[in-house]
Length: 171
Image 1 (cartoon, rainbow, N blue to C red):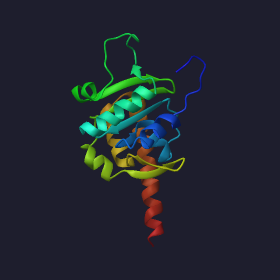
Image 2: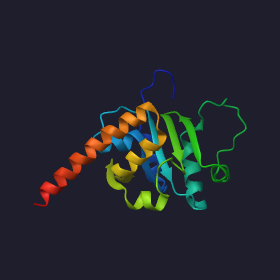
Image 3: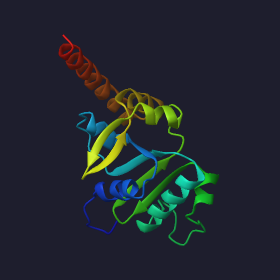
Image 4: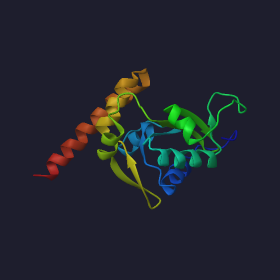
């Protein structure tokens, strides 16, 4: 991201959705969908690991001018499906800000379960999946950093409120 530019998570999410990448938004953005007040400055996604999906994901990341965060721009890293398949969790910097792609997010269930339990949202007319609040709580607890512990507590309060409202609606 260029110095002084404002972070905007929408373009990377739209690029992934438009390329029909199989992904689920996790992390702070998914937390915000559930009502979290925590600000975030990166896009975190879990992704499906088929060869076809990895090809689409690599193409999107190249279109975003993604490079490994914290590594020199000229580091010998080929952003392609083969490299993504050899790894799993990657942190990138793009011209829109940080984008983290996680095949194996700590605390998350297998991808198929993460996807099947996801909440469907809309981003400028595109269908986008967001991790369920219970999966987000598990991921935050597994990360165990002080900020993640705080986030997990907030998400638990939100989950209780969501469940209370759902129960009232069924009466």
